[in-house]
Length: 335
Length: 290
Ligand SMILES: Nc1ncnc2c1ncn2[C@@H]1O[C@H](COP(=O)(O)OP(=O)(O)O)[C@@H](O)[C@H]1O
Ligand SMILES: [Mg+2]
Image (cartoon, rainbow over all chains, first blue to last red; front, side, top):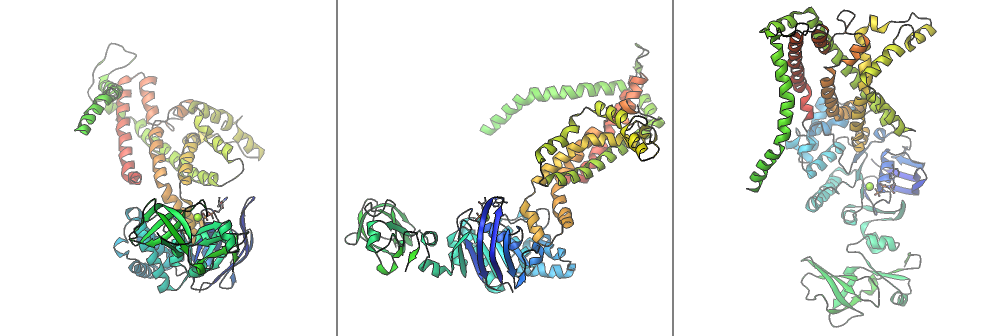
């Protein structure tokens, strides 16, 4: 069980209001990702849920029980920190069994659970090492191990992959997703990386300056971003925005079109431009096309990996009409 | 090639410093050793002659010698216990956010800058004096008999005085160590259900182990040679109650003008200090490995 509900939760540090009143419901078994730029209050929100910070006002309930005033240990949640926060002077075994020891379990039971967790996380061979003797990925796994032995109502992750290299990050992403599938426990995951959000989440919560900009499944956010911020934040490469005369043709203040929804041609099309930088990834090519009549920013286009277009070529772009996003003066979506 | 070359160049260039240090250490040490084998009394100049191990026999069979060793160990041990325990507690206290934190932290280090002679005199005359002292005044205020600290508990009083001087040092080192503890570790422990006491014993204390080791090692070196506090308060007495090894060497060579016996005592003190150092390194030195 792990249904977490925030009602009108606010948080201020002194005079600085970091979280304005915020409502959010997290269903049991869901994988929820909080995503937003650095400093938008993701960690603060997670720490409020964990109980490491006290709410300034509002209510937090966990499984229907009011947890607003409960100390962290009583909330039945486990957290994986960005720095892993392993206990450096304890072996991996002792690290993982620490919460069990604090809960007063007898050594035999502790050992059984530690061995089980180590098996799931491929840590069996490392149980007697110190954290300092492990690689980044292994430390990450120990931190997760310390969380799962407690059998918490929900897991909280604060940017757990940001200290790993790119290849390992992809691996750990899969492992955490698999862990979620097998445990079926609620997980709340904080990241500033929209790729992690898109690939892992059941439900994404996009935050900006403590505000929830939009909540929805990855594809909902991708297809129907509620405003310019979400549209620009979700999707990689970023959505192209065009305002002015071209947008007015669509009866909008700004229109947005994703790089993958633009067709490129050397001979015909709607918008004319010159190719600037092109990034060849093998599977895809990202072309940055300058079309000064439309916008000062280069327009990013995603096309075939083996396309035959180079720097300086004149090209034509054609948006797929049904994939054009329209936004009004306030940046809100026009349907 | 390049590194080989720069290595010998480096050796050549640090050699003056090394030689100077060697001379600095070796000459006094050799002279002490040499004197310790002489019959050398300042009252009878010109009569120096080879004495063999006589000085050592004289020093080691002196009943004051065993008192001195015992007093030295009590003094070092007592001060270490007070400063480490007190230092940890003070560091925990000063680590809490409170108003005027900066000034309090500076004030805490102040005793360290007071000269040992001065602090001992202040303690002796202004606090512990059975007639004029503050403690006597307080005792009289609540109707108790004033206690003559330096007469009835001389060694404990000196331990107190020395510990007062070293407490800031321990506090400061332990406070810096405490501040370098990753707060996420404490938060993780809190989420793991650890009470404050468990967090202290399982997280903070192990984190402080290295700093405590440093405090113990450095303080031991200095505490083995405490002298000024004894000289200005009790002069080693009553009897030999507060005579430590350093003071005994001083008493032998300067009060009794016997440089030979004093030097022998000095050599014995060096050997004992090294024994203590070896013991310490065996016991707690592993904490210094990263
Ligand atoms: N303990 C604190 N005291 C004062 N301000 C804080 C504290 N913790 C966070 N903040 C502020 O709150 C805002 C949100 O921080 P945080 O939740 O860490 O952002 P994120 O995790 O999204 O990068 C930041 O502007 C930060 O400066
Ligand atoms: Mg953060």
